Image (cartoon, rainbow, N blue to C red; front, side, top):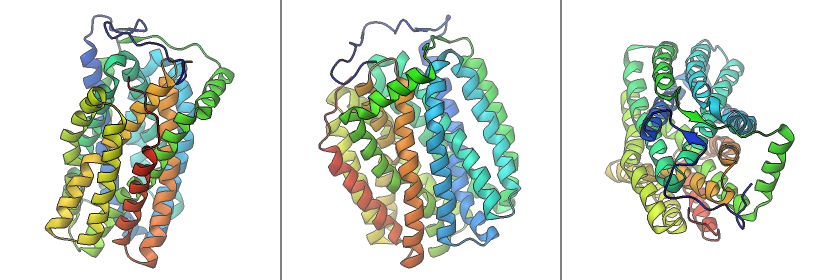
Length: 410
C-alpha cells in the first residue's frame, strides 16, 4: 500500500494497466456509474421529503425522527467496512454489485412502505442506508483507479450524478405525495430501480477491472495502516464533523418547511431541490479546481462558506434571504463530500481506493448518525429552525480544522 510518504507515482499519460475497457470508451463507464448514482439519490432525497409524512403517520416527535435517522447512519456506517473490503477484493465484479444495490433499494423501499411502527420503520430505513452507502466503495473505487490522473474531476462528476438525483427526487416525491400516500410512493419505486439496474448492467458488464487479491487479515492490516496515518485521521475527523451538520440539514429542512412554514409537500420538494440543484453546476467546477489549483485552497473556503450559509438560513428564517442562503449552501452540501474523498484517495495511494472510500463514508455516516439525534433534541428543546444554527456551527468548525491538514495533490 502506498502511504502519504511513499505514494506510488501516477502515470498521467495512460490508463492504469489494471483497467481494460474491452473495446469500451472509459467515458461510458463514467456515464453509467454517475447515472446510476443519480438514480440512487432520487430515492435518497425523495425519502427525506417523505419523512414528515411518515413522522405524522407514526406519531413521532422530532427526537423520534432523529433516532430513526441516527440508526440509519450508524448501521450504514458500520456496513461501509465490509463493503470496502468486498469492493477491493472483488473489484472485477463491480458491475453486478452496483446492479444488485439498485434492485434491492427498490425492494427495501417497498418493505419500508409496510411499516406500522417506529421499530420496523427503523429496521427497513437502516437496511436502505446500508445499500445507499454500499454504492460508494465499488463505484468510486473503480473511477478513482481508472481516472487516476483526473481523480478530482471524475469523483466530482460522480457527485454531480448525486446532485441531479437529489434535485429530481424531492420534486418527484413531492408531486406524487399530492396524489398518493407515502406508502404508495415507496411501493412504485421498485419499477424505476429495476429499470436503472438493467441499464447499468448493459453499460458496465463488459468493462474489465482487475481485482486485488487480498485476505481479510490483509484488508485489516491495510485499514489499520490507513487509520494510523495522521493525514487520513485528520480527513476522517473533518469529514465526520461536516457530515454531522450535513445530515441534520437533510433530515430537518423538510420538517421545517412542512411544519414551521406550513408549506405543501410539493413546496417542500422545491426547497430541497433548490439546495441540490445548485450542486449540479458546482460539483464539476469544484472538481476541476481541485485538480488545477490544489486541494486545501478549494476545500477550506467551501466548508467555511457552507457554514456561513447555514447560519444565514437560521438568521433569515424565511423569505428571499432564506432561499438565497439555501442556494449557497446547496453548492457545497454534496461537492464537499466528493472533495474530501478525493483527498483521502490521494493520501492512501493506489491499491486500496475502495477501502479508503469506505473509511471516509464510515466516518461520514457514524458522525452523521449523531448529527440528527442531537439536532432532534435541539428542535424539541428550542425550535426546528435552531437546527440550522447547530449545523452551521459544526460545518464552520470543520472548515477551521481542515486548515491544518497537509493535502497532497494528485
